[in-house]
Image (cartoon, rainbow, N blue to C red; front, side, top):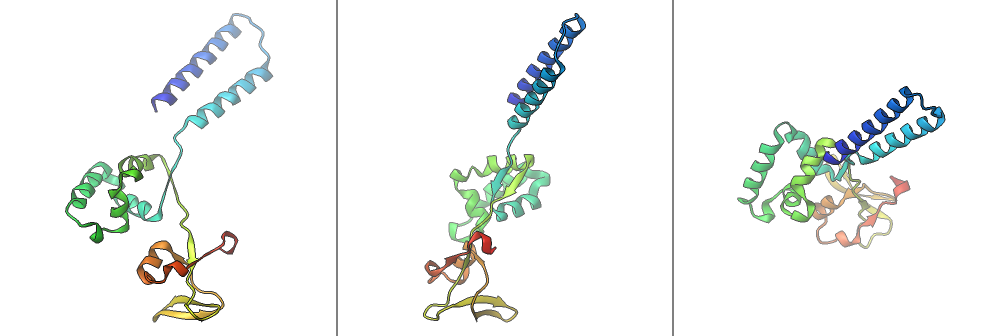
Length: 174
């Protein structure tokens, strides 16, 4: 934010100087002034913080805990050190790895975020041509033609032994 404030101060000084020259009788082309103002606005806009892109499970945690974010982040990390990696949720695993910059990312989410689109997969039934897994009211089933779309975490949960057979969903098929 310091960088943005400095840029805004510079622009205020530039435009104040321009106004003083106008009052002093200096003739100025309005077309040039408008283009300069637009250019300054573009520069300021490009200096604003960009929304951070995060997985859906991070968004869910953030939305539940954003009211008291600092305390929630502290509690999260205290809890993490009391759990084995295998017992952690997907979010807790993500927050455990420093390469994800979890604390910085969660704090930056206050300035806006985008949900990272997770790749989806079809899961074919081994040894049955054009037959795919689907989930219905009674649980896991199979269907001929096309199946349900699964996220990577669902492949790990439902198909750990055969997840390498998963077929990525093409973007236009979504």
